[in-house]
Structures are given as structure tokens and as C-alpha cells.
Image (cartoon, rainbow, N blue to C red):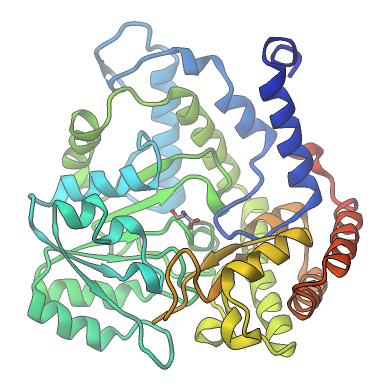
Length: 414
Ligand code: DSN
């Protein structure tokens, strides 16, 4: 940082502020993490200077001898990691990856079926204001009102009536196991493609703590950050038969020049994720989420679906403490615990002021937290709920959290 400090002290100061913040708060947003310094170095490398529209060996610019090998390596590693025939590492993030999957498999106005946004689906899975509903004919399935879990029989009935050309499985705020085999059966009954968006569960699919969609999905999309711990970016994996359509959908269909520095960082992250150490980390994410859910349930918290099978938990703050999700998340943050507010299934409240708070264990697991640390987190979360309007108590908890965080070694990331 010894150049930016002189050249742009304002931005330098803001970066330093964020560095300090990330070391002082307990980061529980399930889509966030700490990327390794190796990933950060690659993403800050000279590859940011280079244009490479096209694919390795077929570019429109000269000077590709290094980036071609980087991109080929990233694709090979991604295929090995996710057991799929073909990888495209160029998507700028998860949303463009989903757009490209649609563009590859569908025509405008084709029918798509995805989980409703307010029940855990993603914007790009058919939300009315998103491209996925504006350019395609979208219908949403819902979770069961009692169990808050996916009801496969109901989805089959809906699919038989609606006849979608694409069904999306894989979510942003759904804490339970997804049965990709059952989704394949439903897709086969109606002749639909299966798109598995594993952005949230990517690491658990790698470690075997969540079933892998590879045998069942036509296309898999994922972000490369979140639990996977790479740079901010997207990835598409597919069967051989869809490879050329997927590549054409990304370029020229949707994007221009790939972000080569991010491609390099993705390659580094995939190498990390192929290691035994990553398997241990990903399994610990799962164990920590189990321990955190148990610790919260033991303290009277109401959790959507009654718990978790994955890395994430949704607390119904209204049902737990008669506090709305936004107020609770804001109080938690004042006490040094970072979460995001989230709708709960069939939420009577609007998305900007919903009933729930979403938490997850990837970032704290990266730091080295174990099951016993989840007791500390649950205890502090209860104390915040019980003292939501007492700034003195919230400040005291924040100091305790800052002290607690001093035991972790951030030099690997920051
Ligand atoms: N916005 C992301 C998340 O926080 O889960 C999903 O794309």
C-alpha cells in the first residue's frame, strides 16, 4: 500500500478502515469471507492491464501467451474441483453467470421455474424486477408453510402444469439440503433443463457435506467468492453438450473482455480448494453451523425450518424476540456482530424491514473458530436481543467482541 498512501490518501484511509473493521467484528454474513493473500495478490496483478476478448487460442488481441495459460489452468482446475466436463471462468459474478446459463439454454419468453425471492431464491431466479422475469416467463415455487422446506411433490405438480423449460435449484437463503436427484426427476418428467446455482453451498459440495449437483445438473453456476474463498467473480460448469452454447452466451452474448486479474485469482483459489486443508475447512463450516444452530435453539431463538443442514441459519427475530430483523441486525452490528437482515418464508414484512436475520459460518471458520466459539457468538446474540435499546450494554459487548477477535491471526488475509 506504499503507493496509494501518497497518491490517493483518501482511498488509502478507507482501505485501512476496512482492514481494521474486518479484524474487529465477528463477520457472520454467510456470503462473505476472508480471501487468502495469494488470491489478493493475483487479483491485484498486472493481468488487470490486459484485454483478452475470446477464449484461449482464439482471441482478438495479441499478447496472450501468459493469460491463455492462466485461463486454461483455471478451467482445468474448476472441472477437477466440481467434476464437470467444461468450465467457463469468465463470468464477472454469479448474476452474469446465471444470465449466461439462460442465454445458452433458452429463447426469450421461455418458461422458467425458481424459488421465490422472499423464501430464499435469488433475484436472478425469476424475480419480477429482474431480467430473469422481464425477458423470460417466470413462475416461482414456494417452501412448505409449516416446515419451511422444499416440497418436491408440489414442485412436480406445478412443473406439470406450468411446463417450464428450465428449473433452478440452489438458493441464497435456504438452510436445508437440496435434493438435486429429485430435481432431475422433476425436470425429466417435464423435459426441462436443470440449473444448479451452488453459489452458497459451493464449499460444502466440494467437501461432501452437501450433495453435489454434478451428476444431475445441465449447468452449474457459482460465485467464486463466498465459502469458496476466491475473488469476487462467477463460474459456469456444464456438460460437454452445452459447452459451446455456454461459451457463446458469455462472449459475445453477454460480456466483452474477461477480467484477467480475476481469472488469475480464480485459478489460485481453485488450487487452494483442491487441497486437503480446504476439505477440513469446509467440513468445519458445516460443524460450526450445526453448533451455532444448537446454541441458538438452546437459548430460545426461533430458526427458519428449525435449524440448518448447511452453512447458514435464518433467525426469525420477530418470532424469537418481537424485534424486527433490521433493528436486530443494526443492534448486533453496534455490538460487533455483522449480519444481514432477511425475509423469512411468508414474511408479512417488506424486504427492507423484514422479520429475519441471516447468519453463516464461512468467515469465522476461515479464522479458525470451532464449535466452542459458537457458544460465545450465540450468548452475545442473545445478550444483544435482551438489551436492544441499551447502548451501554451494546458498547460493552462490542469491546468484549474486539478482545475476543485478538486471538486470531489476520496476517494470512489482511
Ligand atoms: N447477495 C448474495 C448473498 O449475500 O447471498 C447472493 O448473491
